[in-house]
Length: 37
Image 1: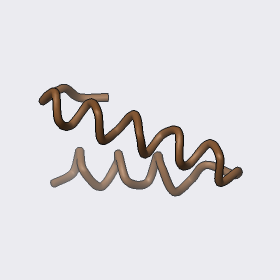
Image 2: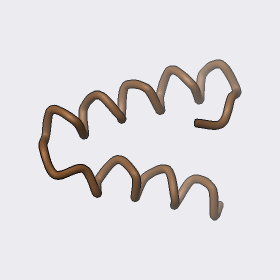
Image 3: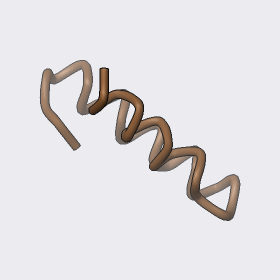
Image 4: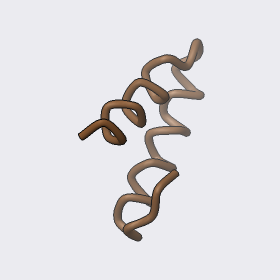
């Protein structure tokens, strides 16, 4: 749970929406592969 919270914070803490979307995409693809970011 801690890791997930940190990962979500990492995404929403991005200043620009473009960066947030990029991070979110990276997070999702990593999650599907079962890896940690």
